[in-house]
Image (cartoon, rainbow, N blue to C red; front, side, top):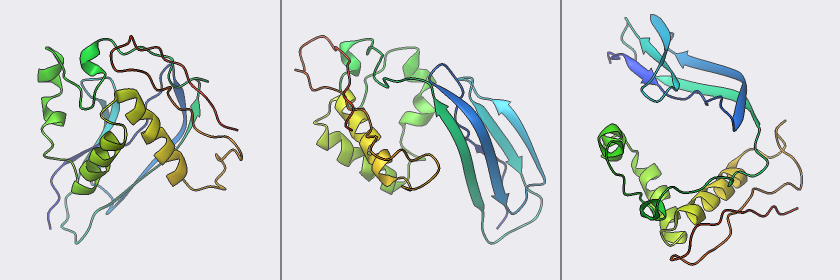
Length: 173
């Protein structure tokens, strides 16, 4: 098969919440060329292109990131319309996110995972994020250099749907 140019979006962002310490992108077959660029949201993406035909494409991203926030829920949801999953966006966000919101490029397994999580969270954004955090924690390789025995992911508190979002967290040790 002939591989068209690809944009690889697998590099974690460095910002006020986390610092990217190490990043490695391995692509097989080796691209004819690659270039790191910024996307419209300021994320580093890698454009790759190929000359030869191939029978497969393997993309592997490895990284180490230092989490700078003690409390992953130290933010406020900006409006009641984003308290539920999926978000209801207003302009200009609707137009800016259209390419991501149409669902065309979402793998069926990822869509099913998101639907299951949204259902378990009863459609509440913070509960969904807490469940996602828990699932990612449980799914990673324990015993890796980044595993902290006894440390549990933070969880968002439950709250009534009609109240102002007060964001706290609990850690389980």
